[in-house]
Length: 460
Image (cartoon, rainbow, N blue to C red; front, top):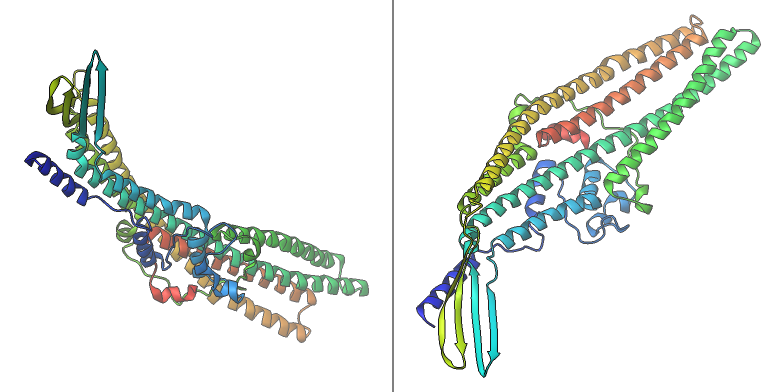
């Protein structure tokens, strides 16, 4: 082999040795490991089972399916991140991006040209091999650009995982809260039915008037309507959770806890929510990566603005009546009409768009962090106020009314009115708990990290 072909072969080997490889998981393992540290649950890429009526093997032995135990919040998230088919479709974006990276790191295949001409007793044959020279020169730039895009896609998929985790946690809270509210509404209905029956007997005996009877009857009727509304809300909330989990058939018959978790002993104290959001949120990181990728595009555009097509290669020619000829070919696009200025201007405008999107994302992240933290603290304070002040006072009032009723110092109407007031207070406390745990999940999603573990143990 002559020195030139040997040198060319060595250069090609060195270039191909730097080509990116395609891994079996498409690079999703990095996303799964990072999300486990952020949300406490490991997403999994499945090739079969998700959304097909068959649970993946990693979920079959969960207590909720195997033993019929109630579904807790973290288990719900675990199921959703493995079994939801829409989320699984998003996971494969990482594999697509990795394949694009591997493709960008490989130069174009050389082209082989062959021409055979015969006539008049003469035979002429031309052969040539052409390489995309610009592609060879710009492959490192294209590889760096696709590497940034690959990282960006991983962040975007991670952001989708966290959004779905938030949706699942919110759906679980709503489903359990609505189930708890339905159970209490049925208890109130039973109490209202007994009160209406008592009022009817007293009215027939002449011990009460028609006004008091009508009040008890309308409370009973209202309680029945409340049960119907609570039942509809509980069914809708359960279906929302089932959709987030990606379950159907017999697996959709999972059990839920009877009530929401109690309030933590104290709320999370966060004095730098803006800094946490800017450091942890994946949408901020994705916006920065997009700006970097656009800057890389701009550099590549400037590099190739004048030389858009440049092909070089080896050629030889042989004829039956002439000696064999050797040489090379060169194909170059002449910049007579398009000097590349429009492409550069477009790249610069696109880059400025990306920079402003980064700024907007940062402003939004700061504002949402403040808003969600204030909502979280307010929800905690309201629920705590109901738990520590309103419910104990209502219980004390009920005890005092019962004492007076037993001492014939209070009427049955007073006792029934107090029961209605207690029912309203308990219903409001259930709603306050629902609001708190929803705000808790939204704050974690907004900050891109879990709260202090000492506050998390109450949510298990």
